[in-house]
Each structure stands twice: as structure tokens, then as C-alpha cells.
Length: 474
Image (tube, rainbow, N blue to C red):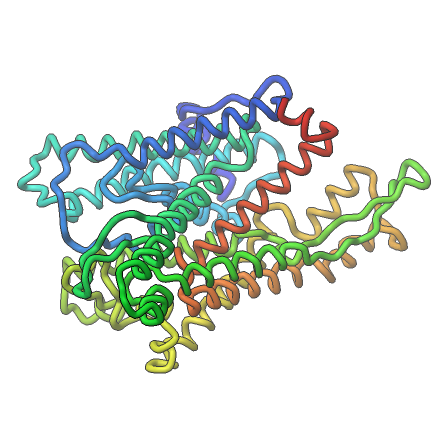
């Protein structure tokens, strides 16, 4: 039944716009050029406002997840990478649960990827329609049918551009993937902005700069009590402070340190005697996939809960899912009760003391969900022990001291453990960053660091293949 379902989708997948595979090996300089061009298009789309929307001072229902889904409110990048991540999450979980049967042949994988793209386009259109009809850009009756259709069309076209940009990089024209590039850029932009933003805000204590570093010099220059000014720069509330900035740097360092943890399994060539090598199994075996999947799950739950809460305020079932409040002057809504409240991170360490049940449930959910998604991902992504053994066999490599048949058993001792424990560590680091009050949320920082490290590894690999920095760039 699963195969039949994908076969039904195959004719539709052929109609979708597609980036053809490169017919030659793309040079590193060209990859950098295509990657830079992709990033430029994304950044331009992040600044182009949607035509026809009404300005709104209401709380942003997507505030919590904009950094993670590379989204910018009121612009062409309103949806960000949310449709791609959501479609990938659902399709991979369906395949992992054997509800969709996907073969190993290139044709089957192509149909599966096409179905994932088709599903992403459907989700893009669905999300755009929901955003417009729920009044995110103004009352639909006041906007008019023509403007509503135009807004949906703009969001759909920009979502399609994101899909194609991601495919462009993944087909080998650029470095990494579009999803990773957009997430890392958005998070780093947020961190840099909150550290050096020149925007001034009237806090009631006088005019202050939003950027933590600029605020430090401003407070030291304008306040007569320098010790109090320094304390305020480190611990001020409701604005970025130096403690948040230092916490961010601290978490960056910890994640980079853990990136080096790995087990090297000795392997040798079955064809050539004396040819030895090693197969590395990293602690973060599934990289940042667990936190991306967990973020996609929670972000969609937040959006659904806030929209239902707005439309059906006071309903018992809706309140179980989540109760939201928007403080005066705030640009975001806060969950105050319900499931969403217990799945959201505590704001400060003080909140942990005030409501330890909330903190414990949040920690349990983060650790459990990240470990589960990491363990599940190896089975659906072709990186399980059985898949790795098959790859080594195709390369005519075997593990030293083990026969070909016992390789799967030996790999099973390491890979599932690395996946589950690595996912657990990812969840724990995210919780630590949230509790320390790091800029951009714990999830965002973990995504940024792991993605930047992946790009560093790609750069080093290309340098080794081409034989030096000069050959690489010139």
C-alpha cells in the first residue's frame, strides 16, 4: 500500500520545478559563489515586506520559533523553512513507521524526494492560507478577497523559492544545505544584533541601547555610579545583557568541545592487503537533526495552540492545549497554562525555583524527545548499523578482527548508543543554554554551532582534497 501511494504521486512529482544535477564536478570557488548567491537571495527576501498587509502591533504568535525556522515577520520570509522541515519530518516519520514503503533504488528515492517537495508546497499553501484567514495581516473582510489572494500568492512563491534554493545546494552546486545555511544565518544575525544593536528603547529608567555591548559603554558613560552601571549592564531585565552574551559564548565553547568526541572503529580493505583505515562514530552521530525535529514538533504545536486560543478563548479543550497571555507592550505571547506551558523553557532560574514541576517536565521532555528523534532518525535516514555495514561492504571494506557477517552486530554496539546518547546530550545542552538565559534560545545556539562546525568540516575536507589554502581559494 505504501509503494502504491508513492506511485500515485509520481506523475505529479514530474510536474514540479526541479534543479538538475550538475554534469561536472563543481569547483570549490563556484560552490562558494552559489552559496553566497543563495544567502543573498534569502537575506533580500527577509527584508522585502509583503504587499497589502496592515501593520499590526499585536503580539507575534510565532515569536518563539522565528529564530529556528529562519522567519522574519511581515516579509517574504514569513514562513521561513517551516514548510520544508515539517514536510521532511512527516515523510521521514511515515517512512520510519513503515506506513510508506521506500525502496533503495534511485528511482524510489527520487519519487520519495519528489513527494516530500510536493508535500512541502502543499504545506506552504496551507500555512499561507491559514495565516491570512486567521487575521495575522489584518481582518480578511477589510483586506478584501483580492489582497488576501495576493498575500497567499506572495507567501507561496517565496516558499517555492526556499525549496529550490535548498535543492540547489543539496544537488551539489553549493556547500551544505539551504536549511542549515538559513538557520545559522538567522541565529547569528540575532546574536550579533542583540549584542551591538544601536536601537534605543525607553525603559522607564531612561533611554537605553538594545545591544548589550553598546549599552555597557553607554551606561558607564552616563551613570555617575559606575558599579551600579556595570551591574545593570550585566543583569538588566527585559533587554539583552552581558550575562546573556557570555552565556552564549560559554555554550558555543561547550558544544564545539563535545563535537570532538568520537570512537574510531578500525577497518581494512578486503581487496588490498595492508590498506587500513578507520570509521568514525561521533557522539553527535545524528548532528543537529534531533533538535530540528523537536523544534518542528513544538513550533507547530505552539502555532496551533495560539490560533485556537485566539479563536476559541475559554474552551476547555483549547485551554488544556495552552493558555496564552500578551503583556502590554510586549511583542510576544507567553504560555501561562496547559501543555504548551510545560513544554516551554522557564524564562529564568528564578522561574525554576518558583515552579519546579514546570522545569522538571520541560527537562524530561527535551531529553526524551531529542533521544527518541535521534534514535529514530538513524533508521529512516540510511545511517543505521545495517546501512553502514552495507556501505562498507560496497566499498569492499571490513572491520578488523570481524567477519563480514558480524559487522552489523559490532556496529550495533556503537551506533544506536551514540545516536540515543548524543540526542540526550543535545537536549541537555539546549536546556542548559535556556536556563543560563543565552541569546537566541538554547535550541537556536545548538543549531548555529553544529551547522557552523559542519561548514568548517566541509572547508577542511575540500582543503585536504585540493592540497592547501591557496589552491582552494585562488
